[in-house]
View 1 (spheres, rainbow, N blue to C red):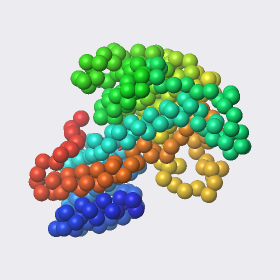
View 2 (cartoon, rainbow, N blue to C red):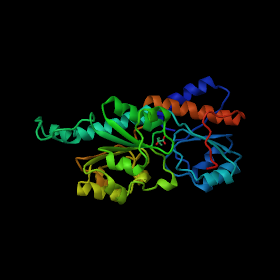
View 3 (tube, rainbow, N blue to C red):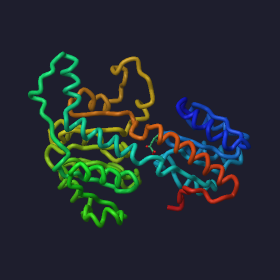
Length: 327
Ligand code: COI
């Protein structure tokens, strides 16, 4: 539980004064799981994986109802949850706009060369030339995954005058009527001037963007990932940036983010992760530390929906956002 979540927790508590809640700022792991002893349910949020050992300990304490405050479920092995008899809820729609708007801002900052203008500004250089930008209007924006987040991105892009081409195994009927879907991921890769990922990290999609996928993209493509780092083979992405095949990258997630994000280093030089080091100090790369979700609206909904669903499960009611762990 972070400091900024505590106000919303108090609000929820005031409405549910019969529920006893305790919290910790530590992440959930094989040791800290001990803190859950004596409680009926747990509400969690982290990007680190949930180990079988820690889940086994929860079950030993008689806890079988888990609610995560976020949408992504890649930290769980569903087999562990099934074997140990857990029920799980998540918060799939805490604010698709938060992520979609952040995605848009990454695109705009790259297209309008904001990192370069910032650098010039710091050097008291207020001239335009040669830092000329590009517009979203008229570009082809490729979207892989049009669930809650991807479909908001599609609407924003269309409102800004882009042509949208998208792929999803389950097309959204409203967007289908607008004729945005193509038949394959490859077709999206081929057509997009700007490419953005909005798909969960299923096992089959690990490194969906690899050397072969990058080769299919347009030269100079702007690539955005605010979904999951594991969708991208980061070394292939770095090679694509080095060769100029990829014209710019906006990355809110990284494969090795757990070693870097949500930590405070004394200096950027203290960050040792080689992929992170290879990506920074480029004018055409913007990294944000998994903050696309991070708005007051989102955090409010993450707290309220997760706690309400944990209570629903504990009271034997149907939760609003049950996760199907049979898949
Ligand atoms: C998610 O909701 O899955 C996110 O990526 C947000 C983060 C707080 C884990």
